[in-house]
Length: 141
Length: 141
Image (cartoon, rainbow over all chains, first blue to last red; front, side, top):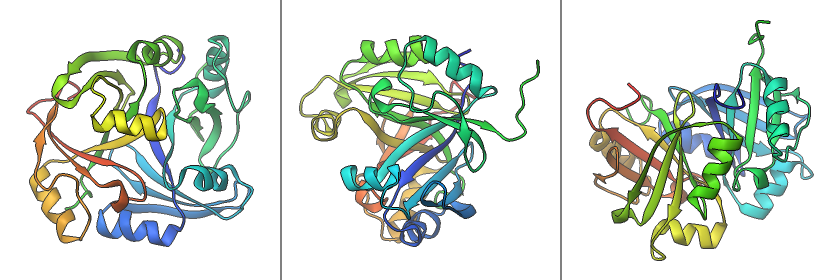
């Protein structure tokens, strides 16, 4: 299957200040805020906005040592990752691994909406791909 | 309405070489190729791949003076823009303009799948937002 069954779930955008970014994305652009949360384990504050067939995730680092903070220091604000929802993240990772693609996470870890894993940007032409198996989306054996 | 009714249509990714990128995105990652075309007016070769609820657009510059070529020289390969489909692009642009957002295109121009316009990345925290009003019945509908 690899990512043949994958669907764009969200695009992650790293920003300096979440309130400032919400003033743009929610108030000026008009996207509807779905959820705002703090994820101290990941060193970020997050807001999800409705974008019809998927969501926009605004990420603002709260921990200077987080990957998000390093990205912001190196590249500035902007698109950070594309997340694809997959029905079975372990199987997807096995298949990508067998294709020789460099993974950041060889095994899934817990994200805010389910199990997640990242493919290394060097494996995908500069794009950080996130895989997400949403909570409740269990595979049928 | 602004972008309240917008849906993620595709994410555009700039790459050096389209065949090389297809070897990754189609062959290794497993996304299905929908369409490959040359857009000499835009100075790019393009491939669209199916990503469930939207598409991935791989863009490779053929013209060194194109915006895509300048992006590639400055930032390297990676995510270039997020495209949102809107029902009425002129109305969306008027509303974004009235919000004081800096636009690259004040009026729509022709893209490969309909009328398009870009919002300036400085207006959206480093993200280049494309608006698209699709021609008639699009291939995915």
